[in-house]
Length: 244
Image: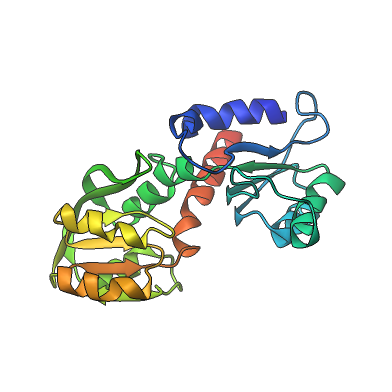
C-alpha cells in the first residue's frame, strides 16, 4: 500500500478525527518521497519515535514506522542537536513516520486500555476516564475476584514487573478502571467511580497518601509496559489481514 492508502486505512479503524483535543500530531508526521505512489511493503512498530527506533526501522528495511508517541506535539521544533538526530534517519532512508497517541489509548479493541482489559478478562466494560473532554480509558468487572498481586501479574506480559503495587483497597478486587501511561492523577476518577482498583502506567509520590486514604488499590504497571499493547495489537491486525 502507499502511504496515502495506509493513512486512510488507519483512520478508518483508529478514528483519529474523533480526538481533536489530542495535542499529538496524529497521523502522518513525516511523509516519504512519494506518498501517493511509493509502495510500502514493511511496517515497523514501536512505542516511541526516537533515534534508536528510526535506525532500527531502517535496518529492518521498513518503509514506515508506526508509533504511539510521535516526534511532534503541536508546537514548533528546531531541527538541531538530539531532535535533528531523531528526524534525520527518516529523511535519509525515505521512511514515513506515523503516530497515533490518544486514539490508540482509547480504541476498542485495538487500543492500550481495551487491550489491557482483555488480558484480565474484564466484563461489563464501559468508557472511563475523561481527559480534555475525551473518554480514553475503560472500566468493568472482573469475572473472578483477584488480589492486587494477581491483578498485577495478569495485566503485564510474562517477565514484566510493575513499578508499584499500592494495595490499599479491598483484598478481593472486583471492579477495575484502566488508563495506560502517565495517568496517575486520574486515580481520583477511579475513586469517584467507586472502583476497587485502578491500573495505569505511573504514579507520582504526591499521590501515595491520597491513594492510601481513599482505600483503593493502584497498579502502576510502567508507562512503557502499559503502552506496548496498542502498537502490538495493530501489528497483529495487519499481519492477520495480510495472511487472509
